[in-house]
Length: 363
Image (cartoon, rainbow, N blue to C red; front, side, top):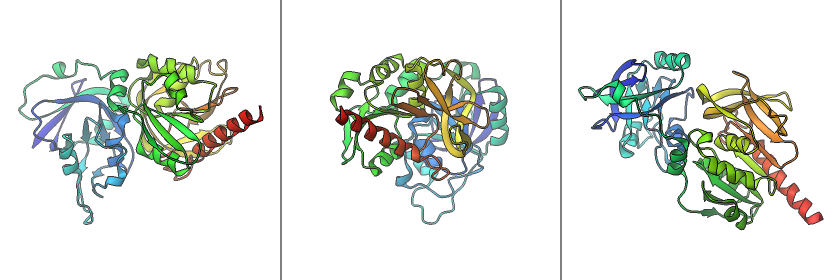
């Protein structure tokens, strides 16, 4: 079935619909691109992509099928998938990308000139857009007037509705779920943590009632400035137990400490972003998925030390507080594109919890 992608600047890209191709209404969202050569299933099921239509720059997508173990959550969160070629060849695959999208009622569009589309987003910045089948009525102006969903509604959409536990024999880690990926929880469990996942809008009193040894602020979608209630909660959590922030959690920790965030022109999304570890001088390869960043201005005055910087554009990729047991990174250390370049960050978090407990016993 023929269809088209229309951007808010009026650009039109003709293609072929697949997945939930019989959609009777246009699908709208923020059009972003990811440069990873693999990981299309992880990308689709990552809650951080809620509200977004994802362009994959690698041309052949779907070639190794779908496997349940690769999903980062129990559903697809991306609003649509935009690719050059929907292709499959793995004879061992029982589920293909087309069927996976159909099952979750998500539309895909192929035969798109993704190189041209990506260059337009890079030069003009992230834009809203819509996908519809040919012959459907409606103008570009009507369908792209509405702004992308606010960060507050997106976080409420992706967070867990109830607290749940993944028992372990090690330190207790309370995870504030802003759209947490399964691999983050698996990494904590692998290291022996007693993991308790709580809804995003849990208050500080409830979190402390769970007797955490550490708190992890998870990844998630949207603008961190749209969730001031969560920022206020993080402020109350500071100083009591070690805190580790990842992606959106990094931005929320920075806001809680008085820093500012801003929207990037086209974001960082992919598995090949080089980041400098400022403290060791080493370069690590990272997996990233975010459209906002922490402004470097005044960080030192706020007691924050920049620990990591993006080598492509110099943006802040990691922070550590000089006095409080709190640190964060903008990238995803659990994704392991290096493949173990940044996995030690979880071990650093555990060491921080062990030190804190030792200090309390010594008092």
